[in-house]
Image (tube, rainbow, N blue to C red; front, side, top):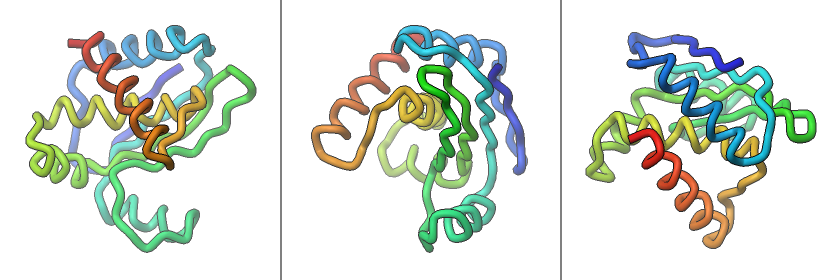
Length: 136
């Protein structure tokens, strides 16, 4: 089950469509959907989590906590709306495209994809682009 939670003044348009899209990504990656919570928040909210749980004193657009059991995906995906807005400007893309990117990015981590090396980042970006096009 995919749920959307809001800790900031933001509402995800088309929650049902987005939920179905993420569910389809999970199935396409040969995984099973467990409980995945998206939490949309501010920079300050996510920064506090970053410091408290990851000991990183930086701003970020997304933090995902993975509680998956094998191929059954469970987790909490925290997304800073402030960072997504800024990143959309920096990357010269539409806000909606950038929010889709970070949403699918989080679930792709649960599917086993990494983004630490240049090669891993390339694979992750290719997957993100593929699934964003599936929704368009």
